[in-house]
Amino acid sequence: MLTGAVAGAVLIGPILWLVGQGSSWALLLAFVLGNPLVQGLMYGPMAAWVAEKFPTSARYTGVSVSYQLATTLGAGTAPLVATALLAAAGGTDPVYIVWLFVALCVLAGVVYLTSRETSRGGLAHTSEDIAEERVDLLPATDSLPRV
Image (cartoon, rainbow, N blue to C red; front, side, top):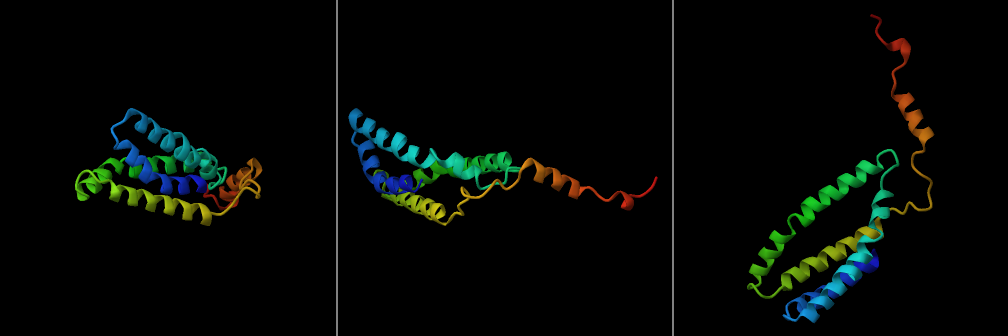
């Protein structure tokens, strides 16, 4: 994922330049650089990376909520932000969009590098651990009120 963040930061300028060339071949090359290369390097391992951040008892919910919030806040607002940045730069120069993307790639790289590595540890919760947690949550029978 770090390779994808670096590739994204380095290639965003050339990709947007290729898109602006008005050539079908340049657009195809921009797509090949951006989608299978940069996006593949960043998002290919992301499912496993995000999943290992949550204990097994909350993994499905944690991953789902993370993806949904990131999509809503990030991808949902991206067209508005990009349009505003393009307008701020005069309407034809994507320089501010490039800098935003570079900043996001740097932020992603910092997160990857500072994230706790969990591959060498055991699973946070096994089925036995979950069963014990459920038993520990039950109140003692002698403390229940009598009816």
